[in-house]
Amino acid sequence: MPFSNINIVLTGAQITAIQNAITALKAPANMPVQFNLTKAERRTVPNISNERYPYVQRAIQNHAPTNPNLVSGFAGTTAEAANDLTFYDQLKSFILQLKQVMEIYQDTQQVAGSEAYTFTRALYNTSKDAAANQVPGADAVADDLGTLFEGQGGAGALAGTFKANPSAISAGESSTLSRNITGSASVEIDNNIGAVTPSGNLSVTPAQTTTYNLTATAPDGETLELSATINVTAAPPPPAP
Image (cartoon, rainbow, N blue to C red; front, side):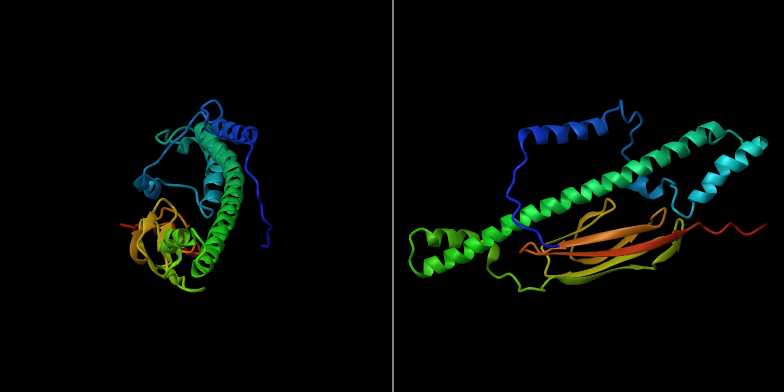
């Protein structure tokens, strides 16, 4: 996507408005129930995947109301379950919009960082030429910035693979995420995994179909994004006695 020099900073009023909006999103008055699960809980707490949603919806909206004798109450009442599903649907709409906003902010930050980095690289190249012509002060600039730029690989040095094996499992089973990245300074995987080594294997046990996104960053700021999806189906019922 082509873009021109952005050359802006946020005003104090804009920063305050954005911060106030974020504060409002987190305020208990607007979100009265809030949870912060651990990594283990995110993997083990049951959730509604796309495949499960129609079954959950039919259970709460059709089966339970017409068969009240089947509702044990152990997992709550039908009314409580209906509220849970409504709350889930409400949050789903907000989460989609928040992801879109986050993507815009992250992409915009990357463009700003790219422009700053491009300026720094141009200054380094100019300082090297100036130092060769004995321009006063150029050596100090070239030596300082050379720590970043000297010895970097050429274009296309960043490459690799990221795969899940197996890519389809039953609930409760595990899959291995394998990565092999070359030319990177840092590698991160989302879904609360975080920073990892450029090459290696990682066992995961997703509770539902999950796409893992890997982002590798080279010393010169180049990025490589790879993804691997693990499809999770409901565990088969136990054999009849």
